[in-house]
Amino acid sequence: MFALIDANSFYATCERIFRPDLANRPVVVLSNNDGCIVARSKEAKALGIDMQKPYFQIRHLIERSNVEVFSSNYTLYADMSERLHSILRDFGERIETYSIDECFLFWKSQSPEGWWALAKRIADRVQQWTGLTVGVGIGETKTLAKLGNHLAKRGKNANGIHVIGSEQAVTAALEAVELGDIWGISGGFTRRLQRLGIDKPIELRQANPHYIRQHLGVVGQKIVYELRGISCIELEEITADKQNICCSRSFGQVTSDFNMIREAAVTFASQACVKLRRQKLVAGRLSVFIQTDRHSDSEQYGGWWASRLLAPTDDTRLIAEHAAWSLRRIFRPEFRYKKAGVLLMNLCRRSVAQRTLFVHRNPEESLRLMTAVDRINEEHGRGTIRLASASPVALNPCRTWHLRSDHRSPRYTTRWEELPMIAAR
DNA sequence: TCTGGGGTCCTAGGACCC
DNA sequence: TCTGGGGTCCTAGGACCC
Image (cartoon, rainbow, N blue to C red):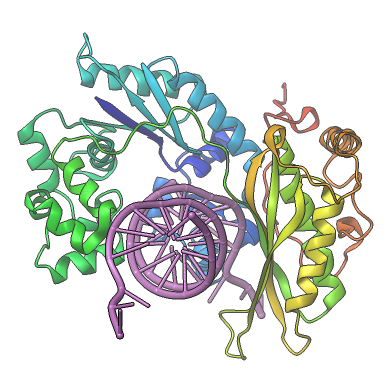
């Protein structure tokens, strides 16, 4: 049996746990750059605030309804996520960390106390130990567990737990949802299925898997089997090494200034390298991209340059230099840019990376230097030591490209100086 | 004025190999 | 004159996920 457990309004709840004064008040969390709504408390949903809505478009509604707004605080969410996952590890025989707020658990045999009772025990413990509320869906395949979770939160009489434990329960569950509610089916697949005359989830389960494969590929075929209770999507207990690492941002305002964009590219490359080293990987290939404002009426341009690095590396200096060089290939001064990014590809473990005869740089020395830089930045804050060509964020008064983050809460659980204070009377 | 960021998997086609 | 069969690697694009 599989369970899919995820936190309700995860980011919004994380914020509220440390602000009990906001209980029962509408809370929203914004994406990077304070762009879109990415999380809403129950009360905010009830006000009709949609997911993914640009913040500026619903600002009037937010102000009128006294909604509390937060910028993303990923440091806090990552730490709360670790607490959630560590609790869940006590319950499953096998466990897969699926996303920042979701886990699959797996049991080979029946639960002695019954699935519903077990689910309740999990939800209660998470609530008591972290303050997070979770939804628990249980079923014979990952897709059915996901479906159960959907019903646990959004079904009729939803109470946070939904067990799909029998043939009849599968049928009832499928009858209660739409095609698009099924894991792996989004707009494109829904339209293709409808063209085949399949409008309802129950019809999809009954469809011929080979026929579905012809039209939706092997991905679609697996969904059919999964809905029939035949498990095709394996539990992934070991988190695989990343294949790509990307760092990209939209700018606070558009710019045509090459030096400014190069600063951004070098900074993104540096940040991507920090992620790379944290995972003990090296990159063999690098892409840089720049983009004009997609929402503007002016002429659009998107530049993209991908090339091999001379040898796989995690050295910020080499990668940043290569990024700046790549940027020069695609930069065109007549456009005003809104976004840039750096993508590291062909990643492999540092320990098994192929070396080269032709680059005369001592990798051990490079590693020592980078490790020292990373440690200093960890202790004293990001950017304490950086390349001279990277952006001196503190000295960037025009805020052309660095992140907007006007409503960020304290990093309550990871910084001594930001610990929550309780005033004594 | 303001519209996010970071991933994975699959497929098809081209270039090449023996 | 005839022109198979079995592969790999790479890239781009499309679909999906959170």
